[in-house]
Image (cartoon, rainbow, N blue to C red):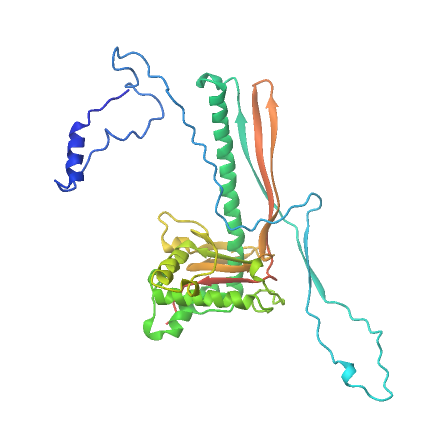
Length: 395
């Protein structure tokens, strides 16, 4: 084992801590051990210089990961593959004959009125698997007892499920991103125009703010997220939409169907940078913060990915070919996305099935395991979905 004398470094550190000297450069290479993959020539005792150091304790990094994607998981079923959604349209009103009686007129009560019912069928599924091989006798030589080896195997199992959770979270976010893409493309058939206007389902908060306050225009999203006036305007607008979507309307879904979303079935997902800015700029100097707070929402650190440094362009953007029921899909590249509000039935993950199959190879004495996952990820454009973003390049 390497043993380092660090008294000189500690004397310097002490003077810095006490304030006797200025902060100076410190050499930490002899203090902090960053670990090695294999033993080196110094892995022997400091007495006879030939006895190999033994492992005193093994620590297995076995930390489960619960994920952080929005909760859109629905139910599953055992037989059949198709998800069928049936909807009844609002029937039209007709004249009430009770108050328009005419002498000698016959009033036929036997007229058949058919309900206007439509349906949508969803019949696609995604799947993946993670293979892993396990041994027993071949790895026993590396452990002191069965408990230690079981801890090692448990660590591998946790890593696999951690990987599956990361992948599932990514698929859930892609389900939301697809709906964002479809909503933007529907609102702006020429998708490049999304940053020069706004619509009822694709709400450009920065454009609306700049139109409302032409003498106080904000140029960039970065400026907007540190502008208390914009944050309050954004919170006010999102709250408006939550109230509006609870009333039946055809304006908040691409299909133009008459829908409403009760508060208990309404999902609100916000970009965490935007939500944190609202926490600070709306709440820090407010006595009645309940009137300025954003709605309770699930928060995501990014929509598609963090980029290499979590810059705003990366975490607020999507660049997708959104599935719209055709072979080609629709290409959508947009940035400045701050949040979405949607009905529980607008998108989701259903028929979720996670399982493990195994096979023992008697000749080579190892076991292969396949960790499999199937699920149906769907968008229903007949349900309410609104996206909020901040990107204004208009003159």
